[in-house]
Image (cartoon, rainbow, N blue to C red):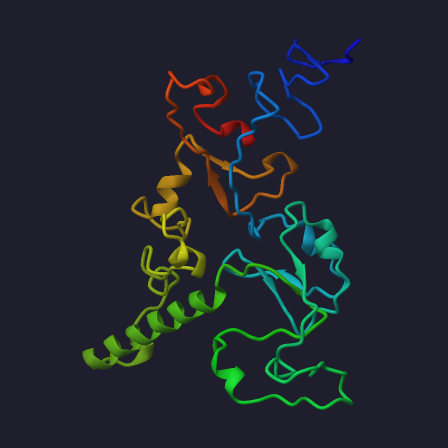
Length: 268
């Protein structure tokens, strides 16, 4: 006899049949039709740090190495991190990684050149340093790492915005105290910053911007769509990164058309 499990939606679930996943171990999902277990459909969903407003990683760090910035980012202070990995254990998205490498202390072109601590020989060549981004700190082994929303690009855009205002003041012949400065005047122009993953995506599936911008911002318009949802929204982390359900248009005459949903909104 197949075991059955009664759900709050009134349906029953038999072993080997997925007729309803509401309030199951995967969380609150919408009811789905039965599917063929021998031909599953895969949906890619890249998950990096979603920059939680109520970040679980911040509450467990004993040295405050992961903090919130004035921009609403979940930032890392690498020189403060002691590598306890408590934040990785408490992250529901599993977006944090422990750095086991020591690229800033050894030359990878030298065979068997492993870093042996402060007493060892560095043997760092000049050529490997030229291939690294000068705006990003090369972390040392023993710290936690994650997506930073390309904070170095945000800082560079802020510097350029301030520099442009200073040039305008000099051209107008006024002094700095005579020019009013506010948060709105120092704000980066709408959609002027692109993160690395956004530039690298060939399908233009990633958008980045300021949620406080006007309605012309791409992220503001996407946030208001019905297909927009927060990943694991029911745990209360209030993520800054939003996902959009994929719209599908299957051919009704195909044999497996009944197993293809019109959208993946049930993944929320």
